[in-house]
Length: 139
Image 1 (cartoon, rainbow, N blue to C red):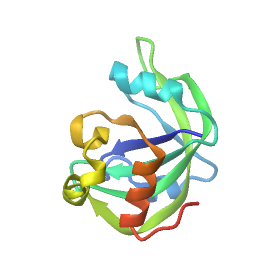
Image 2: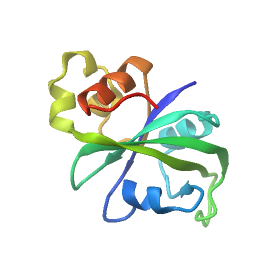
Image 3: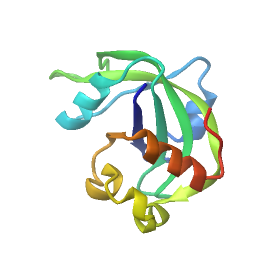
């Protein structure tokens, strides 16, 4: 199993929006090659931290990839991909970016080093540390 972090602006598509989806939500609209390649690396069953960007700047939930990469139906041109996710559970306590940056064991996390990327891998240890900081048990 691999672990990921996906980012979305809560005004556009929040964790609550994903949780409200009947079966799963489509992760579409990624237009960065590195992020697209990360989407293509995801496997069914992989877990991801859901991060609210711009407003909030915090990890708020856990989701699971339920459909592997396929052509993004929102792309008018180009070779872009989408992945379907389902919400697993919200964190009991959202974990702000400031706390992540202050945690010594998370200094190599892509969220700290490459902040603008919308889809990024995280290690199992980083994933579990963020859950611990969010007072949430592993699903």
